[in-house]
Length: 102
Picture 1 (tube, rainbow, N blue to C red):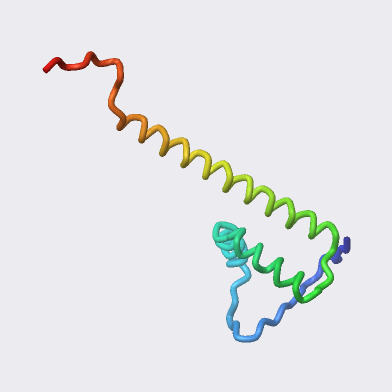
Picture 2 (picture 1 turned 90 degrees about the vertical axis):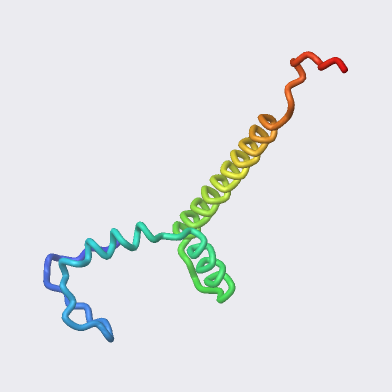
C-alpha cells in the first residue's frame, strides 16, 4: 500500500489532447459496465504464458472471478436444460385422457 500526499498530479497520455478530468467518472462507469470476464480470463492466461510476475492477492482475485464465472455458467446451463425439459413435457400427450374407441 502506498499513499500520495494531496498534490496536483499530471498524467500525459500520448494521442490524447484536451482531456477533461470531469469525464473520468463517466469513463470508469462505462468501463465497468463493459467488463467482460472472458476477456479477463484471456489476459490472465496471456500473463501466465509470458511468466509475468503477479502478486498472490491478484492471483486469488482472478481465480475467484473465474470460479464465479464458471459456477454462473453451470447454473445457467442447468436452468436451460430444465426449461427445455419442461417445454418437451408440455408437448407430450397426456396419459390421463380415456382412450377413444374405434
